[in-house]
Amino acid sequence: MPATESRPPMSKAEYVYSVLLDDIRSARIPGGTALRAGEVAKRLGVSVTPVREALRRLEKDRLISYEAHHGATVVDLGEEALAEYYGLRAVVEGLGARLAAARITPGELAGLRELHAAMADDAACGRNDRLGEQSMRFHLRIVDIGGPAFLGAHARSVRDSFPVPAGASLWLDETQVKAQLEAHEGILAALEAGDGETAERLMIAHVRRAGDYRAHR
Image (cartoon, rainbow, N blue to C red; front, side, top):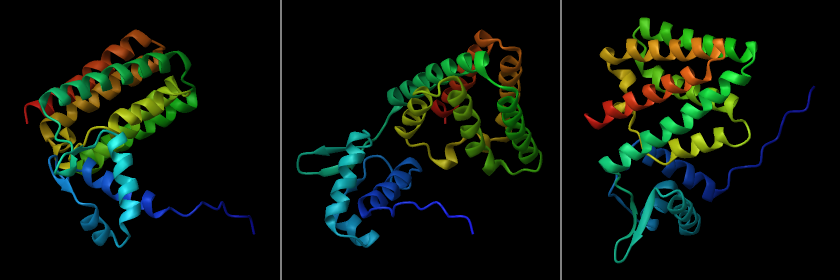
């Protein structure tokens, strides 16, 4: 039998971090919520030590802050942070699209088209709850192609820095789905044509449109 790949077990601190990160990013723990180490430890069945380590990592991620007499609090990101987040995403992912147009392979393009086709099929069948995750994969795959050295990692870091509630996804809005899929089609056409300028312009407009949608919700 072939040897199976072994993975190191997740540490307790890593476990706590992953749970809290998911809770914050999904807004199950909303901005402004105080995180008491003892309460978190009790909920997750661990000691206080790994919780404190996880909180330090979340502070480094700028997702929590420490205030006198309040302890750790989830950062409450307002309108200015929202605009900055989508502006930064537009620049990074737009650059990724421009670079990808110059280096994408037929196999990579086929993979993107397959993912896009799956999204179109899900949209046609009313499975809109799948579209947000698929769209993120579509965007990050393009950035990975354009900037495999560190741009892809940077794009993920930007996305991880801002909690986006699942219910806030524009892909759940039927009035938005067609336009967003058409934007993906345009980006794919530009990538296939090797037109980096157009790919960047379309990606920037696409991301900014998502930001405008969130801002007016």
